[in-house]
Amino acid sequence: MTAVRTLRGPLLLTVTLLVAWQLLHQWAGDTALTAPLPTLGHLWEMIGQKRFVPHVTETGLAFLQALAISWIGGVGIGVLLGGHKLSGEVAEPILVGIYSLPKITLYPVILLLFGLGMSAKVAFGALHGIIPVALFTMNAVRNVNRTYPRAGRSMRLSPAQTAWHILIPATLPEVFTGLRIGFSLTLLGTMLGELFASQRGLGFLLMTAIDLNDVQTILAIAVLISLFAVAANSILLAIDKRLHRGAAA
Image (cartoon, rainbow, N blue to C red; front, side, top):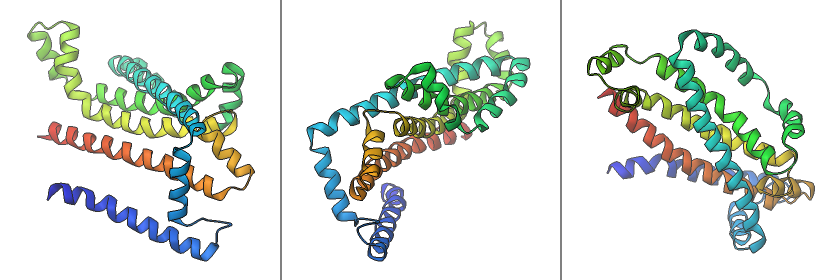
């Protein structure tokens, strides 16, 4: 029953979106919006084409590299700033200010530094995700109950043992929330990087389809990216909720 209740919401949302999509298609017509079934059929055909695989691989590799930088770099920065009060107080408004900037205005700088290709996409994706991860991690470390480190010192734990047995379990729920948000924003940044200056990848295919006014391909790629994002975020959200329930217990 629990599994049924868990799946009921996503299934209801999926059915609602498909019905709304079909109604919009009937109102707008094929030139503006293709119907769900032909679009899904076209997506299946695209997946079966050999020339489609390198584009998916390119996007996947760029995203995974950007995600690794966002997660590892963000957690590292957050731990350092959260562990040093003055550094955190100075850096927090700077990080928030940088994050509030429209990232697309920085893309020409990214291109000048990294050039066209994989490096620019990775850098642009990491730029979107690393700051939220750092901010969540910094606040998690900063808000750790001070009795925990004192307990570690009283038990004569080494810094590594204190971090592993005390700090990580205490901060993990909040840090994981930052990782979940960083995942979504890194994916967004990677896709934006492919849209504007790329010669391969799903973003490149999407821009090519837009130039050709190929509505069916545009929607097929959008559906593919959406399915991946929704599935991955559902898994991360389930883990996030479980970690927070465990921390509250």
